[in-house]
Length: 406
Image (cartoon, rainbow, N blue to C red; front, top):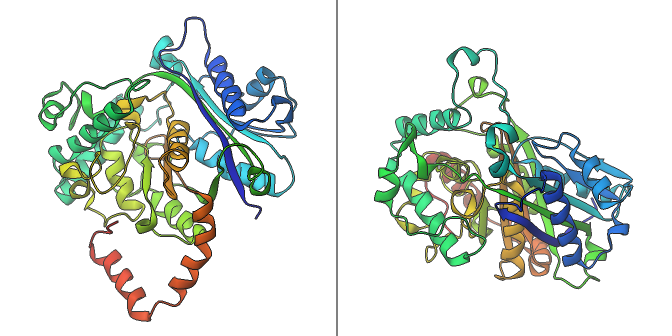
């Protein structure tokens, strides 16, 4: 398949959008900014990818707002995993010659108009009689089960929020929450849905983001350092939480394994991870399912500041959805941050993982620098030459629960 790279990335109206702006306005503003970042004229756009809860015909709306008539459009909606899926689909479309310049964009004014208006939650008929407060109730179920099954503690959940806040403090504006936050503060916050308090739950903000994607060959001729797509995959298990096969295991097991296999990489190669954090339990689940640690070890993995600034695992370096911004579906913000990590922080291999619905849909992408692209074949060859015992040792660790370090 033809290689592609991200050559433009931008955010727009993060926090609270200017009065009078619609979600479509925010999305179009982000797209124009990403094209300017790439140095590509709007007229060259022939692939448009978008989805948003407030914009049913998202790709069509974006094309109209940009004034383009694309050859290829995609409005795939799988919640917060949609932008990662769009990146995967844009690669396929460019590889098939169906477009050359793809824009992936998202916009939301959920804080301005009210979340109930912006993100109407469908209830399964079997769940409706119980009137669960979704999505928080679904994620609280997963957290409660994880605590029961593996002994995960409220303090370990709190460390996810504390680490996110410390990253947001380092980032500064437009980070939404930058006040000091301790584990005790998280534990003492007003309860929302047991075991979650307010600080276990993501922000509710406006905002938008966009990426520009072209072939790897074209990317090298543009002005900004390209960020190459090394591997990508999508997976899903259910739509409504009452149909979730296992509350502590998500389809990230599948999307992560396929993305790593395509890239010829493994979790230990990742230098920075941008992992969907709608609630404090989600990074814990995804760290396990993506292979950074064994199932049940996620709580121990994040505690003590390991994923905070100064720790040995860079995670959600903007502050994520818990402290930076969470504009409804947060996948694009994570991708923009992943691009920053490669471009500005010099990280060669960065993972971005999106989650949609109530742990329903998962999409994993691995991004890298030019150096990562050139090193990848050598990594594959080296692993093929590993003795059988080394491979067996990895399998034993995966089965037996020892943690994957970095």
